[in-house]
Image 1 (cartoon, rainbow, N blue to C red):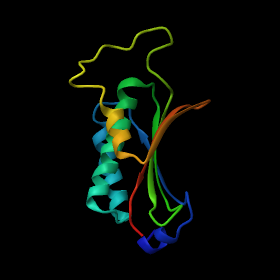
Image 2: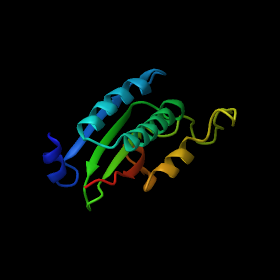
Image 3: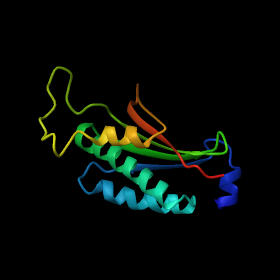
Length: 144
């Protein structure tokens, strides 16, 4: 799809879905694929970096805390002239069964990912559904 076609595309038409292997190196591989998609969408470099950071944080969260399989859906929409990129990671829910404590992590090394997502996103949230849990963020891309 060309940039002109993408700019004219109705909401939800520009969408890519990526499966996430549940391995430590999976996040960097998916990031490379996402970078290629974002380059095709002709986003400004600073917005590309913001989207990639959100992708990294949500995917890492899925690898560390959730049960496989995980899927990332990246979509570009244009509900208004600004447009938005939506990053959504769906997994099979929390890794720890109900009633068990999550493993302890050093607060200097873990725990800030969702704060980063919240700071960069125009909107973000979590949806629990029959297919698992989806964590999502929308970033305004500010181009016409």
